[in-house]
Length: 507
Image (cartoon, rainbow, N blue to C red; front, side):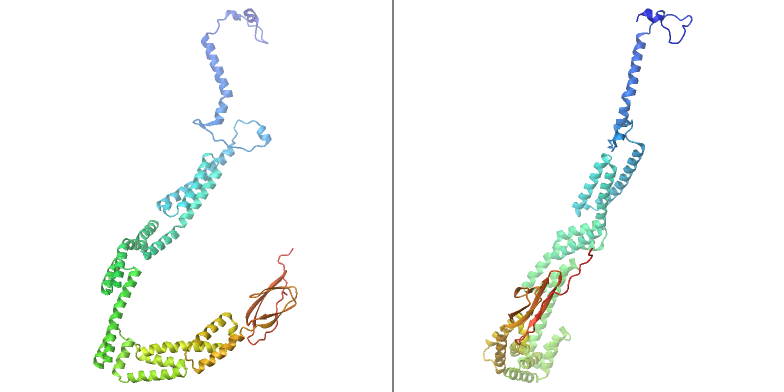
């Protein structure tokens, strides 16, 4: 199209205006106008095609938006949309974010409280596990998966709450460890335990006391060792003084208290024994006045002591020697007659007068052993059925051979040995026992073995107690205990399962 053609054209549908100059007659736009027009066109294109993508991808001030995955139906996916996140979804996301922040606030408060209690000293593993939940929540929060973040934060909050709830038990355990360490003499462990207890409960009386004791424990242990050496060397007075120093450092130290009591008792015993021995020595020489003075001194040392009182009585009563001799003669008579119980009584009576009588000590020991042997033999004779028990039979055999080895047995012992020998032999003679069943029950006889199914079976069993067990499918097991008599007779024994098991909740 030429300039002439342009000049001939008019607006469509409009009549040519009067006086309208031809285009060729108008002056042309300057180059600056064309340049500005081009820039405006480019800006318009940018607004139309570029700006929506930028707004969808960035939030002000141009920070990347979080990618939110949406599950779309095919129809929804096909529908074009300018904003993939709806206002409702944004509201839900904000609500979830706030919920996660609320749980996180509780979590952080608990974490601060536990760190003040130096939780890593007493629950490092559990604390690390709780922090692991929190870190997982952080990762979910960064990707704006707020429901998962809330869940992980809750796990961490619950774990930390459990740690807080465990503080009383941790405190009790620390106190227990501290006290045990004090008992064991371990100052380091005791200090550590009580320090932890004070951290968990500042001002706890027991922990403060324990820590003070732990600080002096090494000194106390050294004094205990020194006292032990002194006591072993026979320096009881020095040992007592050393133990008193230990208790001055730790009045609650049970071992030091016990050792001091023992040393004091040993000192008292030695002094008492020395005074009593001097009294008996005076009595042996016939110096009654000196003996009485010594026994009275012993009585002052231990008021009401029966030994000192008896010694005074013996000294004042010149008949004491006669009484002792009478008991000795009576005891010897009973020994000759194998009346062991009466002999023991006579020796006890002599020892009640003077506990240091050698003949009475030795005589009573022998008479007591013979009395025990006599009773065991007589029990076997009077209760032969007890020999059916394996343990009783073995004991009876041992008693028999012990008695058989005695020199110069009296008539009573010889008669007992003869009777027991016969009874022991009879106890080993098997007895025929008839077992009855229903030929349907599996029978097992303990001490013998599996007998299987049968109607009737006869076994030769030694006297004793037996247990038979029967089993049968669908029936309740039975257990039968029976005894094979010592008199070579035994009643038939029935072992059969007859009680059917009823099924429960049968449909």
